Image (cartoon, rainbow, N blue to C red):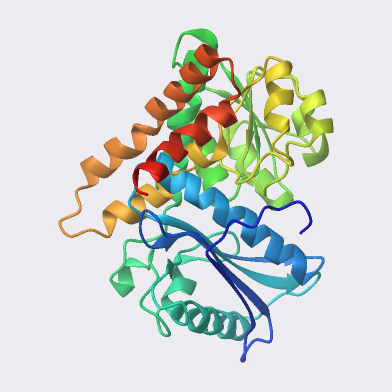
Length: 347
């Protein structure tokens, strides 16, 4: 965890009394309202790696929610699975009940939802222990998981990036490399293929090759995907993919994707800029899911209004590109300034 700035309001690290798993709930900021961020359940080499991920992800959620114009703070919960551990359905239930207890102990400072390794159905189990959970299945009276909205926001960001690079939002014939075909990446690939894009795809799960075949997309190994010559590289897996080495090997004009915390180090933004590669900051691009959860949970929620708000992520991305160009700063700095302006206004 060395090098991670601790700017959080509170962090709870506990051992689940049922599951025995280490659970971290990180509340970065409640300045704009209750902290909202998903619950990630994933394998890490050590429990401290899971805590570090929670710290990074929760800080990014503060920026994401602020930049999206939501009256929500930033938080994240991470359940550490030791390497090689696969949970049974009963084990998952125990983990979700333990997570619910941890969240309830924070007295409403944080609300969770599904994320990597969890689902809307698992959130229904969390609800048995706390009311501070959203994205529940429709069968439980909830609004469902937000993957469709997240993918729609990424799509909007892609067309905004293409417009900045080529002067047109048309994806027809544009070559995109999608790394990660999970809940969001898979939906995104389907939408882009339907719009006429040329796709090269990859995933750590070889079973995802079936989707690639269905879409007529080229399949490549994960390790070399970023070296493919294309218009855009679209990271939709786990974070940290944009290392200094990867940035130096990229063969695209732009990077825009759903993955959180794409930069291994913030200095990567300047490295991308120096190479003339336009990067759309991830915490802006992937905000469609939290926009959906926030708006769909309101009384008299209107789908058309939600769709318009998600589509408007393209306008935010365009503004960030414009600010970065005009002020001679990286897109990361431009996006952080946008989020900071709203946070400061709430002080």
